[in-house]
Amino acid sequence: MENLMSIGEFASYSRLSQKALRLYGENGLLPPAWVDPESGYRYYRLGQLREATLIALLRRSGMALAEIRAFLRDPTIERVEEYERRTADEFAERRRVLRYVKRILKEEPMYDVLTKRVPEQAYVSRSKRVYVRDLEPFITSTFSGLGAEWGKEPAPFVLYHGPVNAEEDGPVEVCVPKADGDARLPEGEVAFTRISGSQCSFPEILGAYESVYRWAKEHGREPDGPPREIYFCDLEENEELRMEIALPLR
Image (tube, rainbow, N blue to C red; front, side):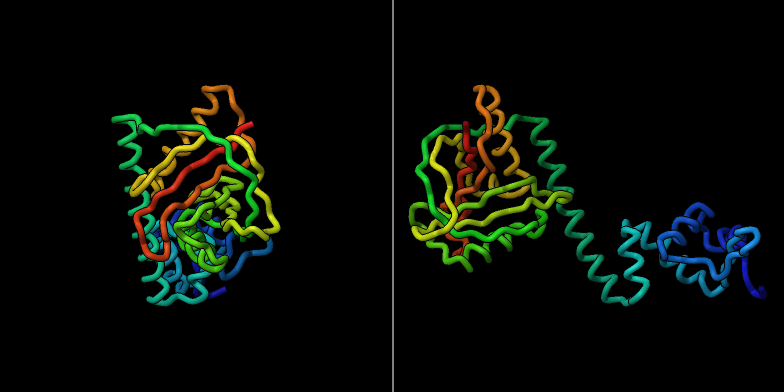
């Protein structure tokens, strides 16, 4: 066929390796214009160089293959700007996490862990799988939707049925105490620590969780259900965060 380049020639022109071209072809990003049915050799059109350059640049920016494939279906400046904003947010989050790691290496975070017995509590709730970047808005909006009454006891709380971070999504159960609620939090003993302000933000809050789990291990106790965050501040009034991190014990 005329005006086609072999994969070697196209690799040289596009400054992509043949291995990368095969990978992009297999993932539907840059399929060859023609494959020789006898030899299996791949050939590309000159016009595909622009797509190859875009793919190389987007990969250099850290964009995942699946997202590049979606972008190539609708390659607009607006989508690039949206990705740029998201990347900037992710970079800021990584810096925040690394600063906290350095703090841990310099000095061990100190949390006072206590125990208490809590009564059975009826409640209503909504559950969702959510990553850490979407956790705060989900909690706040769900508390509001369920009619949380701030400043009253018992306080609204959140149950974590699985880890929540950048790769894992719970699920998370947002709960509001209601006398006629159809769900029940069992009575029992909990280990807990109180935190406020920046201690309540990710990743600092991980130190509080580590402390209650470490206390349980050191005292020969086992967790008896999902950990919970109990909120003692009005999220709708943007009060400083105040909460307990509590772990039920058996």
